[in-house]
Image 1: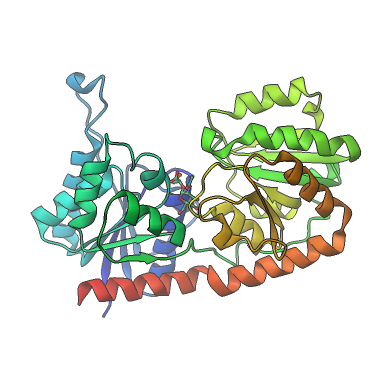
Image 2 (image 1 turned 135 degrees about the vertical axis):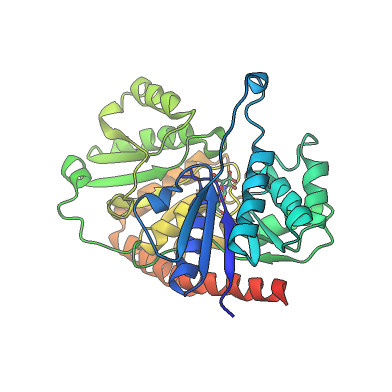
Length: 373
Ligand code: GMT
């Protein structure tokens, strides 16, 4: 049966929007009709078009009375979802990130009588979702939609414990496009012209990413490796703090801020390792993207990261506050090219086996079919 699927996501560069759009692309390639719904063009669709994907934008209608609270997005999104279900005869609506559009999806189910599935991604559970300001409503939504899924076993356990959900919850890991994220020749890479070896950090610089911790660790390593760079990709609240810290530590010449970038493959390929310092990470999309490029990864042993990194096989994990361990692992990978190559190969193999986007899309499709039975 060829289904018509509505997929709602955030359009921004954050993980849930990338995952939702990658899924939309994969199922469109498999012949399904996809309606992608967001309030702006999702990041991946800015450079990709497919005839089976229709983009529907939520109308953001403001009003002077809403000045202090913002436009009521939950209602605006619900109205758009209901319109699309009716106009395009959608079979199933799939929502990515539970807040606030999980509530819009719940309303859509009541109004348009359509099966609704929600995929929880991370902060919608472990940060916002547990807050009493959101928890009762999101719990109710979770208990009254047709399907729930999430991106790691870690987050599934959080959903069960924090939302007292008795529902079945599927786990689908983040899909990685292994044709886009792969090893490439970086002989001519600009970054390598500046510094022969580089570490890379990619994030939205929110406090949960603890980017300053990376700058501090790098400052120690660069003392022994003067021809070393740190490429910081992304934008967010702590970027300025990182720039100031790099200046204070006297390493500004070594730390390169790139802002938000579309083409990440070349940047990953310049890395001795991808560095993460997140205090929590339900999966860690960029870790898997780097692994697909045969780049080792170093990250804290938190959240769903142990489901992505196999310690000492494709990367290293360290205890959250253990900066000495992070520094030591960075040095090991700088000093041992064979170790770096081995971790890289193992990482790619793991991604191909477990996170390859077409395979993950098949898992979602099987789930949709089950929900529509
Ligand atoms: O930025 C987003 O869109 C969501 C973000 C979050 O804060 O929840 O990312 C989450 O979803 C990604 C895709 O499933 C995961 O790879 C990230 O690990 C996860 N982030 C966190 O848990 C902090």
